[in-house]
Length: 277
Length: 150
Ligand code: B12
Ligand SMILES: Nc1nc2c(ncn2[C@@H]2O[C@H](COP(=O)(O)OP(=O)(O)O)[C@@H](O)[C@H]2O)c(=O)[nH]1
Ligand SMILES: [Mg+2]
Image (tube, rainbow over all chains, first blue to last red; front, side, top):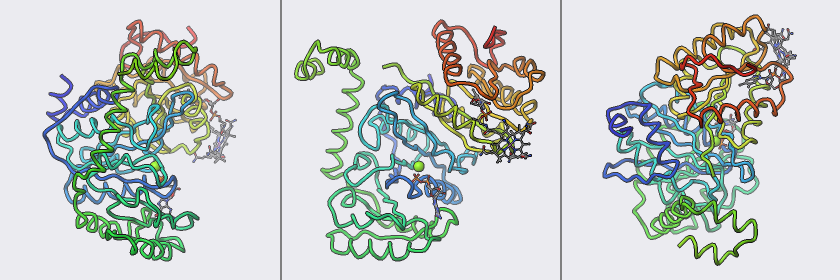
């Protein structure tokens, strides 16, 4: 029922359909869309940049859906979802849909339910989808399971910027944006990253942007368009498998019971795994 | 594990006092809920839009500037008009006793002033969860007279 109305454009119905999928319902679609994944360490300006990108796309007449992921507390299960704070574009009425998503006990920077959520959005006419991952490090590339294009955001003054040479997310990235170009040091950071990347096999463009002033944002969009879509590579299928496996596990009807039994010492880990098969 | 409640904490109007709202947001997160914080200076229209997009169950409004008398009821009104009358609305800040009855009549279920403890806020949320699980209608547009403290 939700889905019918959501397809007809009801925002409320769309939100409810997303909730159903977020709570574990499976959903797939034939509809196409373009998913941009925005990743990078906490504080580099992902949320502010997503806001600028959303504004730029709407100025071109496109509708934009944003899914912004923040971590859940492993202890209380609660979450403080604060990305919206930085996103004035969410007020652009009919053109922007913005939803905060908590990781709900899953490891990784993008919970497995997000794939289904993007399918709901595509089905309901939201073709341009931006996903902000949890602020994450080098070894977190679950976003590759979902995104057609991956944007890595960096900022000046981060000691570990020259991680670029190391293996990790950088190998899957399509474009790097060095944000906060209004601050000193941004240009040299961008140059350092370009340098480090030039040794690699894949050509990855580096853009300077300011999510505060909006400088460089339209150039960044052009670069991402040129970089084109990620072909669905083996890596991507692998991440999709991990992600779907995780969803099946955490949605298993006996998952919580089994945790209870493990906690009370009633069963051991191999028995628990056996129960989850 | 039960699905966490989704709670929007919002600051309507031009009021710049955000400490209380942040304290409440953290308290609710630590109690296991998913809290969406809107940031300062939101209009009632923007707040309702946020509640819809986030499919929230509960909305908490914070005001210390004296504009609650207009902004809180207006938000409840807009929620009901948007078919979101099932959303439970509560609030806090500097709200004189004399102003509270009007806010309850508008559909709000609790008002908390300075010095409110996490325990009190959590007790309120637990009561709401209990009532919801019994299918009692306690949303701002449900016309239920019950309020916290009765
Ligand atoms: C700190 C403070 C400031 C700081 C604010 C910093 C910040 N970022 O928040 C600064 C210095 C910037 C400031 C400025 C002003 N302030 Co001032 N400020 C205060 C003060 C001293 C404390 C507020 C506070 O942070 N308390 C601590 C927090 C944790 O408590 P709380 O906000 O009350 O929240 C608790 C409860 O109320 C409740 N609660 C609050 N919201 C919510 C929401 C929900 C959903 C729930 C469940 C509970 C809940 O739970 C919280 C935890 O217990 C109060 C006086 C007072 N004692 O309250 C004046 C006060 C609020 N300010 C006042 C005024 C007038 C101003 C100014 C207009 C100018 C001035 N004369 O100083 C400016 C306006 C700023 C603006 N743009 O709006 C007046 C308001 C008068 C009124 N409403 O009639 C007060 C009451 C002082 C007074 N007695 O005159 N202020
Ligand atoms: N100077 C400057 N600060 C920025 C810029 N973009 C974001 N910031 C600030 O960086 C901080 C983190 O931004 P946020 O978007 O929340 O980062 P996220 O954690 O990566 O999502 C905030 O204080 C922003 O105001 C920028 O272009 N220039
Ligand atoms: Mg962010």
